[in-house]
Amino acid sequence: MQIEKRVRDSKVETVHIVRPNHLNGANRLFGGILIQWLDEVAGIVAKRHAMTNVTTASIDNLRFIQGAYQNEMVVIVGRLTHVGTTSMEVRVDTYVENKSGVRKPINRAYFVMVALDENDKPVPVPRLILETEEEKAEWESAQKRKEMRTQRKMEGF
Ligand SMILES: CC(C)(COP(=O)(O)OP(=O)(O)OC[C@H]1O[C@@H](n2cnc3c(N)ncnc32)[C@H](O)[C@@H]1OP(=O)(O)O)[C@@H](O)C(=O)NCCC(=O)NCCS
Figure 1 (cartoon, rainbow, N blue to C red):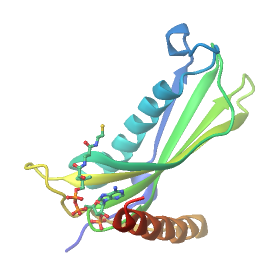
Figure 2 (figure 1 turned 90 degrees about the vertical axis):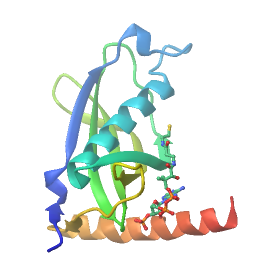
Figure 3 (figure 1 turned 60 degrees about the vertical axis):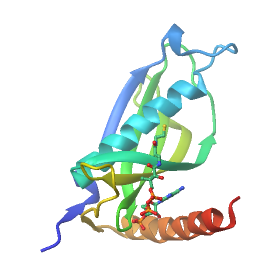
């Protein structure tokens, strides 16, 4: 029987404080550091779902909406939106959270993670159970992005 898992089974939330060593020359959070944090979250989401090693196949729609500054609290939330045969799309949202707990979105990205077997070959992942209307809508959008990525790969742009 094929294993099925819910979106909430692999959801991940992490929190970072922006330190001086995370800043770029303009005194904002350095994009490369943020991408590292996002990739780690996407990797944990995918590992929790697949229960195997995973690798990052692509990152897209990486949209920097606003910057983050020293001592700010950066909250990163990752959740699965779609699974293919061996690939998983993880939506990763980043927020700056203020003292009152209000979250302001600063970034959104979509990671495609691929599950790997012990020989580093792609291996099938559990099916995804969609429990809410939002999850169903996310799946539809993710399906379109998957088709666009396949097209881009075929056409080499
Ligand atoms: C990702 C990787 C395992 C895919 O290998 P591959 O030989 O292309 O495997 P396949 O053609 O069987 O594709 C496997 C899955 O990955 C998806 N995929 C492959 N290349 C992709 C890309 N560029 N973007 C999005 N998805 C991709 C395929 O659609 C397929 O998904 P599905 O099984 O759900 O339909 C391989 O390209 C790789 O190892 N890349 C390097 C990854 C890495 O080192 N990441 C860290 C970067 S520092």
